Length: 416
Ligand code: UGA
Image (cartoon, rainbow, N blue to C red):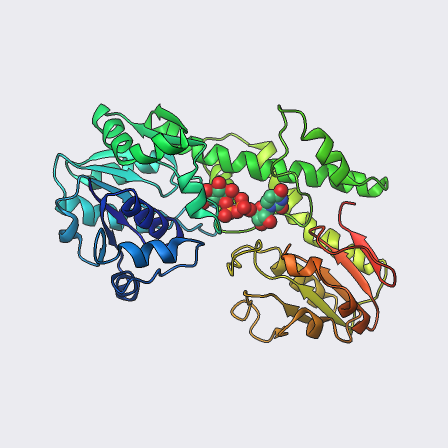
């Protein structure tokens, strides 16, 4: 099938490359000429395991890229995967989706299905996006791909959700994903447009709330000297609870959970409903960084002291620092008058904190430090050992249960 993918971020590029790999003839569209040039040159514009290889294999054959919407007028389906940033008040900013929909609507005809991957509130989809698409048929086709395993998640979906008011959209997308449906055997959920978008919001809201709930319980466990991880392992055996997303610690960040839960809270309040559970999930998440620092306060007065922050990325395996818990941790340390030195294997916070001291290694960050706060669960932190001997005061507060307890250091786990 001739397919097009608008937006070449981590979701769009992964899908374009994976669809080409499934045998489709795919054109990627992006407004950034550098991104288009990279794909045309056989290079992935984003870092995702396995995607580089697929772009290199299919570029020039079944995968091409363009800035010109006219080039995709003859495709049968378009996947729209552009960003929906959050506004200050928590609502989403749908302007990128609207601009892309307008450009698409100008070139595609009646026999064309536009599947929206970008996450938008149902009213925005129906009232603002749909009218821009002209005669094309609208579908909502949310993604459940984690950053860092976007290709693996695309190839092994637990479900494919297709929302539409039109039979033709279900059939076209099921044909597009036929290879996946055959190999991975996911549930295919045919539903309405509004329901499809709410499934995406609810999926992320549920996962974020699950982490906040185990963090809330974890804070109680810590007060009673109980290891939350042992509790989580046992409750996770109950299939009604499940073991995934029960790693308690310094909380969730990234471009999805904070944005989608805020958008849902905002949307609820617009309808004069107060979503108490979602608001509480946010409140618990906001609290965790300060709780980590109060553990440090119990052992050192950080004012005027060198303190190491280990990990800046919002999770391991990425250099993405959007909404990383490292930001409030660094802010809290600076408020206390500490001199912060940070280390991450790939990420930096030079933009957010232009004067932040970035060390070249964990050992360098720990050298002479009077305390260390662990914010990201990079594997290499689990292997740290004699590096702690370089600390002036070997106090380690761990927000991710990644560092091993050992003799010679004062170790505090956030919820264990
Ligand atoms: C999340 C969802 O997991 C994807 O299904 C979804 O498609 C994606 O958002 C999206 O909406 O595009 P992602 O933000 O890439 O994916 O990251 P996750 O792996 O879900 O982690 C999110 C945050 O939760 C990280 O900060 C991580 O450290 C934290 N986390 C995760 C925990 O604190 N504990 C856990 O047990 C799991």
